[in-house]
Image (cartoon, rainbow, N blue to C red; front, top):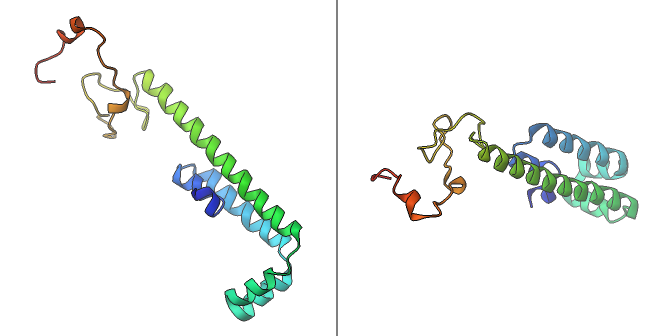
Length: 138
């Protein structure tokens, strides 16, 4: 949802900083290229009301190009989130922290390095024989 509000905000939420900066710059450059100069002059002289009035005369090419950038940004933010989730799950299965990547202590339910909770990655014992191996205070 952040990515649709303004290109790059979804990437900021995902902490993909370089992608966020790239989308911010792309949105500004695209707007500078496709928005008529008369709209910029109207904004400088009359503020948002004048800009809104000037935007009524924009062609469909302006709206399509700006909307296209937003849609591509949303898709990229979604794919970035999926990749980050898959990477976190793969790292968690290897015995390292999904957040910081450092080695985990199997007896702790959090990362001793960055204090990330690991409850979602714990596996429940399948048989009662495995429960006998547990320490009483766990």
